[in-house]
Image (cartoon, rainbow, N blue to C red; front, top):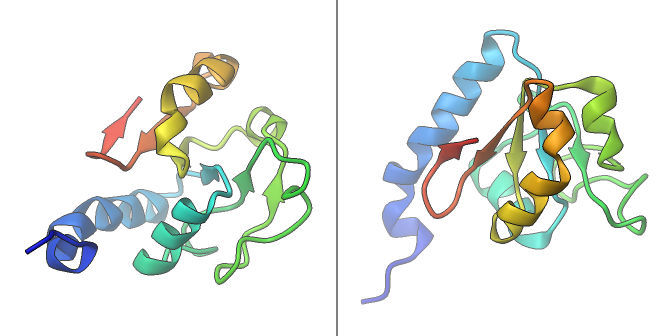
Amino acid sequence: MPRCIGTTSSHSKEPVHQFRLVSSTGRRLAAYGAAAKGNTLLNYFGIGREILDFVVDRSTHKQGRYMPGVPLPIYPPEKLLEMMPDDALLLTWSFAAEILEQQAEYRRRGGKFVVPVPRVEVV
């Protein structure tokens, strides 16, 4: 029988619970990447404005819009440096290496990325 998100969700929800706890401590959280798979993750786990402040994406077609299902505004990546959230949830995890390189200045200033897949990692 193939493994699906439903069969592993109780195990998978622990990092989301930790992310909620972090947001309750006053740390500012954002997300990087307005891709469909990231939006699915947000909607599945119920992550929205109560946890994240905003989403950034390089696509000018997505900037100025909102994430479907969770009304989070989408800004250009420069917003990370402007607002300096403590952590950014990486919703485009398959491009992690490229994005981490592009966002070297954000990381140099103390910003961290939370990569949720294949296992939760803070970089």
